[in-house]
Amino acid sequence: MALDKPYLDVPGTTIFDAEQSRKGYWLNQFCMSLMKAENRTRFKADERAYLDEWAMTDEQKQAVLARDLNGCIRTGGNIYFLAKIGATDGKSFQQMAGSMTGMTEDEYRAMMVAGGRSVQGNRFVGEDGDAQAHRQPQGKAGKA
Image (cartoon, rainbow, N blue to C red; front, top):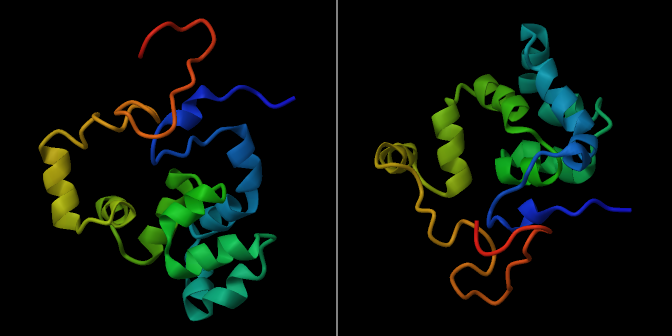
């Protein structure tokens, strides 16, 4: 029986739970391999060949090759492991986060310095009258 996951209502957010962990196991193991200099060198020399050594799905491999971090997260990647890809590419975490939001590094920095993204429309699906109504978690009354 599937667990109730009321947190799935948060727009644009993938929660790294046990299901995501299982789905992304090999993707995250690949990322951790990049902690060793010799593995980073091998990966940069022939990215596809190195990825093919891992039992990842083709969708995961394509997301890594495209540096589609949102795609990596959707397929089970954990941002703390994915940071190893960015480090291998010489990117800061801030540059990576900016790319995930469609912003430049400077735009992302300015947003964060100004207090981060607005909570309006980002609390749960249905909050601002969008088409899908919010599911209340059991035992909760009203909006959180």
